[in-house]
Image 1 (cartoon, rainbow, N blue to C red):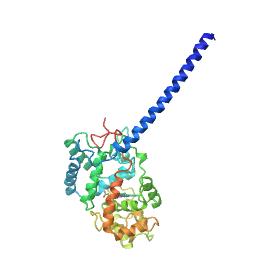
Image 2: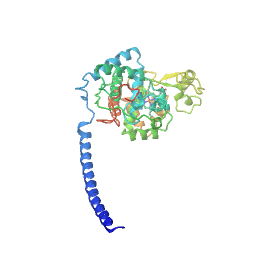
Image 3: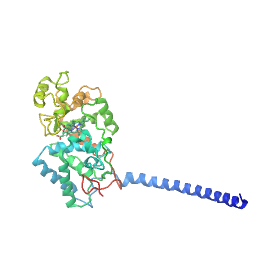
Image 4: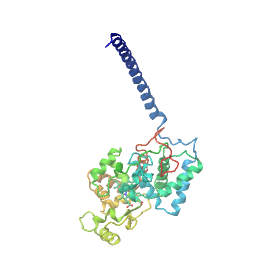
Length: 344
Ligand code: HEM
């Protein structure tokens, strides 16, 4: 090799190494500065805030409430359906409206996953979103709309009002394989683990099971408990449900499967009746029933069975906490124009 070339080569290398060192250093500096900026933004600028739409859509909450009231007086079963939808949305990728995306031929979504096949109320979400879009186009996210709708549902069903801080953004991912909601025949230990992973104590989990004080379930979710008495279901309830559901459901499609109220005493009231049912072996879902005897939950079930006011208050607090799980904020995600599809 020509010495000159060698020299100039090594000189060039030294020069480059020096430049690399300086540029690596400045990259590091830049990262530190950015990390600081991001950390500050998360804490100060991007936390959910009840006044988030004060400038862009001051009447957002009122618009949602009016639309919900109109729908509710037409069909009150929408309120339990929306409460359940919030749970299914927030447990998967956080409260980002990922549950609302409709599958296309090219891209399937959370909605095809088994627990979501019995969700209802997507048409109500679309109606509320339309009302929001005509009041303030492009301003209010579907995730915020659902959080407000769930709060209004609780109130319409006689529960306690609570504040809903806003500023959630809509997610850009919705994948069926990420839907890891517990099944109604899951072990309670596993379900408690799933709630703990999202920040909920056993007590809060018991309070959220109180969601089953309203609404209905398909027989397929508990029919297997009817055929053979095993002592975990009150015998009169078992016989009545065997009549109502039939013992052989086979593969009935969800629409053809009969339904039963989860709380037959007061199916449209947020009250503590479901805990009395748990304690009397009168829960339809196996998981709810196990909560009455499991050492981590039995005490809470007994407490809420005896404390109607405490339940109503704690349920609203737990719903507010549920509505804040894993939210997207700031520039993350987007504000969808329609809730069932990503923006183009
Ligand atoms: C491990 C936890 C849970 C399991 C396994 C579970 C399971 C179920 C099942 C199987 C149904 C019946 C669905 C149908 O057949 O249409 C149902 C309904 C319902 N769930 Fe849950 N659930 C759980 C937690 C929750 C939570 C945390 C909430 C909200 C606070 C909730 C609120 C509701 C409501 C309101 C309904 C009635 C829906 C309607 O009438 O359309 N559930 N749940």
